[in-house]
Length: 86
Image (cartoon, rainbow, N blue to C red):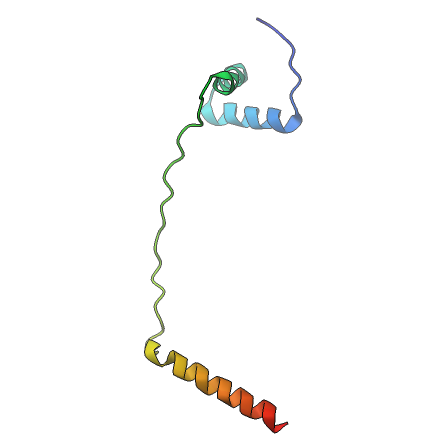
């Protein structure tokens, strides 16, 4: 059946891009999209699993993580001493 359908520009662009990327005719992409949208309980195709790639981010060599609080305390003390002297 032939009919005239007015689509929003962004929707038309998206359907054209989908047709191009899937190497399918525009008409087929529009029909498939409408069928998926009109079928009861239709779901989007499953998304590929997201995979986290860990990154090694240890401390620089020579930094003792057990002494970081001690360093923080020392810096706070120095800052307090400077501010109370003025």
